[in-house]
Image (cartoon, rainbow over all chains, first blue to last red; front, top):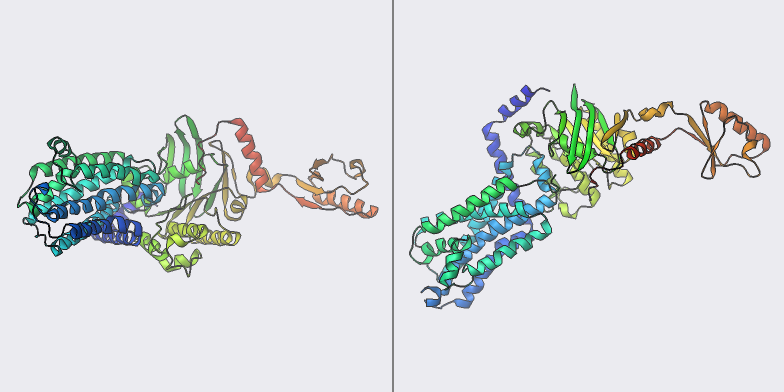
Length: 266
Length: 314
């Protein structure tokens, strides 16, 4: 066996083989997710349940100054849509990666010829599929309760893409920093839960001081970037999208520098 | 041509030197076993060869490549299979799905159904991995190690947790792989496994190789003297025995070492028959691989009291 033979093997495989392999990986990633009742429920069903409950609670309520002149549901459809992306990207990715590392599954993947980037693309594709289905369902349920459809689809799409990318990066970053998988769900929720409250996901925030602070953290800008084009006849919220971009870059940097495959590092 | 070459390999964790200058080679198409106590450096050595860890010093070649060179890693990993110490399989896929997924990672994988049959999981294809027993998961692990049709297979304590039947089945799978041309490097605690399976054996203790050879000749085993053991008949003193060498007392048995076991045995049985007594529990043997192993590792542990990092897996 010589290295020349190895190079010949590599050349023979070619680009098309890589695309087929990527598709193969995405399919099996999907299969693992939908088979796991816990992740399927919490990341997929939970936001849909919340928006249905809110729909039943606030059905028929009209514009209210508490909701900045919107109806309660006009406010909640975009914030819960944002919540579903957070669950599918940030929470899900952080917990899955920390658990798989702890169980030695990541180490095993590392030992196969599957390139690392393909493994991650497989995971990200799955986060995006779950996000898209969830957001579509939430918008559909909203319209059943009489919430008008978004007014600026392009701005909604851009906010969703950037938000998903940002929270995927943050999810991988948090997974890189968590040492022990049993702690992963707790750490993830401990960070996220208070942040959701102060960022206005569950109730509008009327404190100017608080919104100034949370406007620099990742959740509120995402809510705002969706609220505008969804309900307030707004367009691209460049300021908020910029904040998301910065958080996404920070997350990517931490993820790239600190990600580990081995449960027992040297 | 050698499948694996290791020379002057060294590796430390913080203050502990786990591997202190190891040299060995594994020829293509042989089964090579690394024996040693926990913390001797077996797994560290294997993980360096598998590309999981970087070495501090020395030269390592795996199928002609340096495993720490990740740029060429993909092509190398296409030709290597491995079974690690810990069971690690996705719980929610079925047996067949798990193997089919990994088969897709390799350019020329083996047939999924055939591999399932080889490791003895036929009939469980549609079972979810989480519902398998520990031994069945371990067999799935072995199946994952060979699904890519590797030229070189690393097995880190592959039969831990197997029942005796499953263990023999796994040995046959490994032998068949070797006969089909796969090189195998394994670590084990089981002397029986090394004896049955390995073409060559190296004993690691305290981060060094203390002996190397075939299972039959390791540590001068083939040259060692035979040992005749029996219970002293009632009413006899040791001095009554018709032999020149001083026997030793091994528990409640008399033990005589002999260069000529045929002669010694004849003298003893002749004497016993004439007296009309029997030699209860009479055996003749040579030191087992386990005896040699215990001797070798004991000496090495005494020489280097500080042990490597404890890596017993679970």
